Image (cartoon, rainbow over all chains, first blue to last red; front, side, top):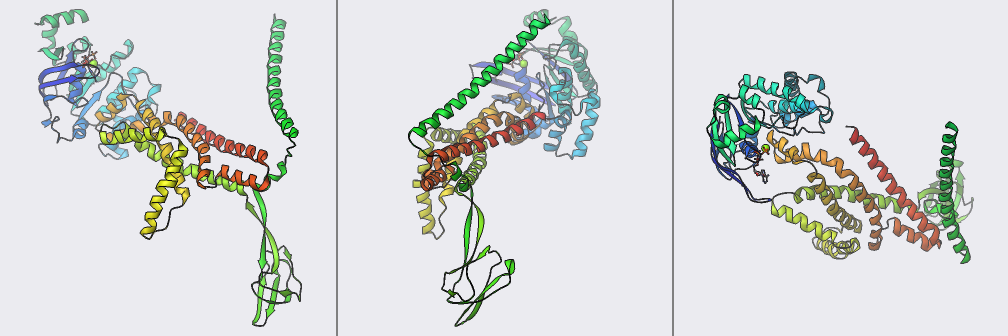
Length: 243
Length: 337
Ligand SMILES: Nc1ncnc2c1ncn2[C@@H]1O[C@H](COP(=O)(O)OP(=O)(O)OP(=O)(O)O)[C@@H](O)[C@H]1O
Ligand SMILES: [Mg+2]
């Protein structure tokens, strides 16, 4: 489903930072991959390269067989197949919950209003905030906003979902409701790449865990491997700090 | 305790009204001093002359266009008809609108002789000037918004051709006086374009449109900066969310960024347009008869400069105040959403 080969990314502003240095991995359809690592290790950059919010400098990124670094690729088409959920939700504040979910369906997927509404209706029930359909995002709690954001991404019928620390901005009591939605998604067979510090989620849901440090993938393995006997010193250090 | 609080309250209230009184005394003192000063130089105020420069009644003459004799005046009031007979036959002049008929049966008539008159209300020079100011400002605002929207988007574009054009435009326009720009439009561009038009057999473009163009490009530069700031004030996450859903850049701009930016753009935009209305007074310099020029003409006729300059200022105030009311209303509408 996703094939990443030797991807490099360097930022020059405000100063030179090598955010990714030769990242390679493959993610199969239906797989749930959790990415962990210390702050500044390049997790977000890796995720954002997958839907070309950041343009990788070199290497190859294939999404469902399409090379997104190829200039001829219509990136908007690929992005519609790749849902993204942000740490800060990024809901559209001038639109209601319902409009947030229907807008891209109509504009990008060219669905009729009726079809878009039907889809939104179904998804709002699924994430459990059906009663807030006509509210504006500012009037929702963080947990509710993040669930709307997930519904908004799902409305495009993506083949892959990317989550960048979806619970980091939430009050502790709301983390559970968001993780529950993500667990359901995982059980339904959605391909997911999740950057998170929620080790419980990793242990329970992940098929594979990727540990990144200083722009590179240091260690890959099953959750059991990671939490029982990680091989690298840096992994051990990181896990000892976080657990 | 309760009593003391009441006294305190009373003292506070009386102090408040005292200072309100001071304010009004100040206002009257200024007006009084001004009046006293004008009296000293024997200026005679003629405020009653002013209204007729807003609307006045014009006398319209119904004139004969032939030589002859009034043969008959038939009918009365609206149905009155004056029949003039000459060697070549007779002609009837309907007097439907006339309030007075000035000829009698048997009168000799020469071409141009007034047969009857009526009066018609018509806008005076000040009202015409105000209307022109309003019209010019509205055109300039509409085009200023168009230019500013495009300019603002170009200003933040990654394409250097677009970006640098926008920067150059903004810097040039903001760096020179509006009056000079108006002169360039009128004495340079207008002459050039009109001569070319004439050479190729088209008709000239009226000075008014060059004036509008000068104001629009001037305002457009400021609106460009306002739009740029408005767009950049929207968090980057909004664009990223829109793009990650598969929207194109223009779609994200149109559906997500601009509507949000609009709310922040509106207040500084209103200020800009109020300046524009006031700046339109400079168009009088290129023979466009807007409010200020109209005022000057009214003064030449009436010889009452004091009254008319004050009136002129108040009329501008009416225009700008109305505009800021409209904008406040729109802001409230948008906030409710
Ligand atoms: N847009 C950018 N411009 C400049 N530097 C950036 C940009 N985005 C990320 N970086 C830098 O790249 C490095 C990797 O950042 P990244 O956000 O990918 O880390 P992360 O693992 O997601 O960290 P965190 O856990 O804090 O989110 C950091 O040093 C960061 O400062
Ligand atoms: Mg990050």
